[in-house]
Each structure stands twice: as structure tokens, then as C-alpha cells.
Length: 114
Image 1 (cartoon, rainbow, N blue to C red):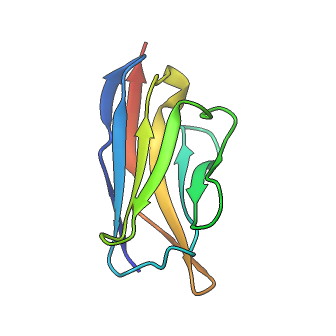
Image 2 (cartoon, one colour):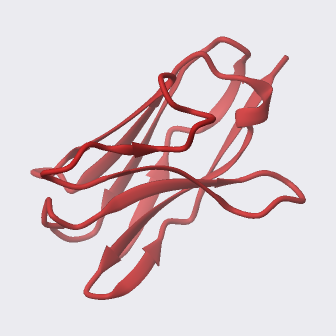
Image 3 (cartoon, rainbow, N blue to C red):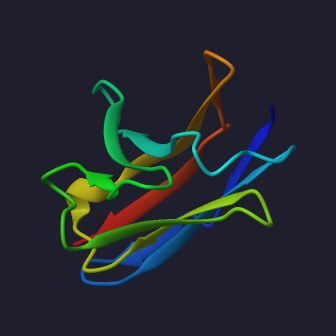
């Protein structure tokens, strides 16, 4: 499975961005897909995940500001990010656990200026 993330950019604090992650093959809705991020000098951290039949999971730091969704027909994962803060800056990666193996996208840079 190949994942192509896009949608990052430079935005002012309080602004919004929408990230997309397109998979190279159909991903069943029961498969967990998620977003992670990594800031310079820090470890990669969980942001949000989604699978059918369950409520999405969010990191406390993004709860009520970010919304994860997916279009199964397009095999695409999204992350709507609102009320962005400088601490949200970093490289955002999408991930899918498919057939007991983790696949990562190449990452998309998000920079939030104060």
C-alpha cells in the first residue's frame, strides 16, 4: 500500500488546513487509518485515527479542533484542522495498518506562524 499525503502549508495561528492522504488501493472501512505528526527534535506523536463502527480517536491536544474523516470510495483519509496553533507545526504523516503491517505516507509539512 502506498500513501500520498498532501494539503500542508503555511498558515497563521487561528487558521485552517485540510490534509488528504490517498491510498494506492482500496482500504476496507474496518481498517484503522490515522494521522501522526512530528515536530523538529521531538518524537512522532499520535493525532487522530478512524475506523468504521467506532468513534474517532483524537489526541487531547487536538480534540475539538481537528476532525478526521475518510472517503472509502476514494480510499482517501482527511484531517480538517481548525484553530491552528504554532504547537501544531510539524510534518504530518498518515498511516494504515493493513494485513498486520504499518504503512506510512511520506509526510506533509504544516507550519503555523504566531
